[in-house]
Length: 225
Image (cartoon, rainbow, N blue to C red; front, side):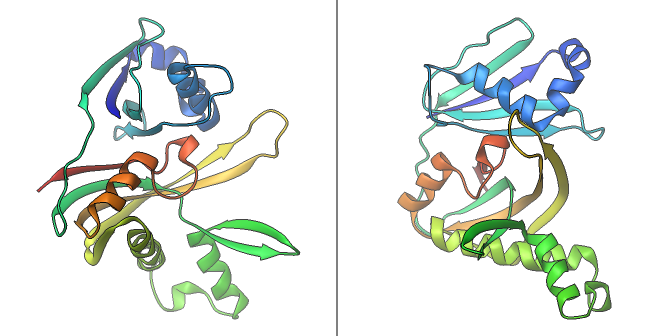
């Protein structure tokens, strides 16, 4: 695996603003950059880093092969081979942009709902509003921490309630040709985790965590404390 840092020329960002601001068009641009052969299955992860004005600063890309820029507007910095060597109980700083969802079967079909929106709906279903008991930030932290703890159990790491910050809830409209438009909602997690199962956790670093990996979610970045 190789970890890349991709920088895009500022003039190109301004000139092609719609491409880089649209989640689906950006997704297509990433595919064009990493594509190795026809009918390739997605085998990469990426994460967009934004500045205070929500402009793209750079993009992190994790892929199992070497990638080269297709034009002069893109600069790529490659790390040495990405091969984490971790130990059980090791503590790491992490960052994760995720699409937390809850899945249900309704009328025989599997459906996904954004975790925070689903929590609000459950309050309304019971004739209440969440504002009666907590702030929006508290609701987001509560339901998203439960999601992250469960993912940790599945992927070989653990987190503690007050060692994780959850912020930057964003909405992206995904509109692709021939498909119904839908809304992608993401949350940013950052903080400290503890490695419980190194092999399982490294696999998660390679494969990603949660859904919407094709749209910039799931790549967990880690560094030693």
